[in-house]
Image 1 (spheres, rainbow, N blue to C red):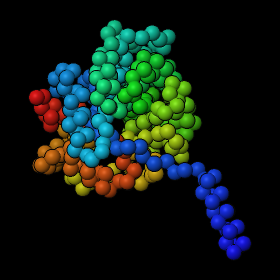
Image 2 (image 1 turned 30 degrees about the vertical axis):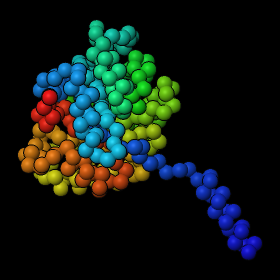
Image 3 (image 1 turned 135 degrees about the vertical axis):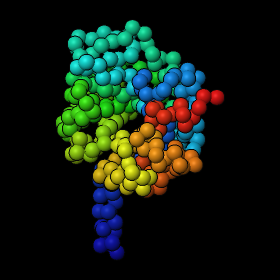
Image 4 (image 1 turned 90 degrees about the horizontal axis):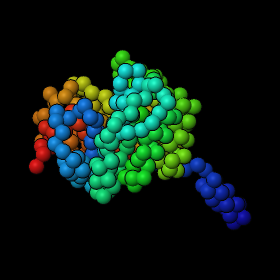
Length: 282
């Protein structure tokens, strides 16, 4: 009896002191938005509504959006709101293009990821500028980096992210809100930090698949690579339209297949390049 009791105490202590596995937060589903993506802008009423339409296709999902506030420009990035900076690779806009919609996202229960295409701009300064501007919005859940455009301005290749860099970015984001997370986006897992997982969502934006099955297969490997850390996916690109156009409900069928095959799926995003076609304004 004493031996069994001792074994039980050891097991209990071990379970209490072991670091918990990182598991995905509640499923979020919506779309990616950039100023250059949609064929036209249907107006501010459209964007909160369309994310809710997409989220409703998945049981229990929160509406979500990757909202791109900084796009590649010259050797750095252009931020589409008024700000001040000493970095010559950061250009600030004159009018805030985001505040009104972020307020609408607050009111409608969204998860909002604020993303930049950094180029050669200082990431520390970009994080502070963006989150100082918008962290008052309860819908904001984190900050995103399109790694394809990190220290890259001539084409979407980017520089691989080291563990040290990833940790620094997570720490910088958490200074604004301890619950904020970082997402890193690329199509190649080799561009992601080798071992750091805490506080990061790994987004795959591959396109140009020959078939639905090929997409699911490649995305499944991505999920396994980073498990149990949360992963997400962008899909709906024109390059894949030859096969997804034949699906009855492309956004739902693709998203559900990813959920069914990839247990650590947290985020599903239809891309803005085809969103107005898929979800026409009412």
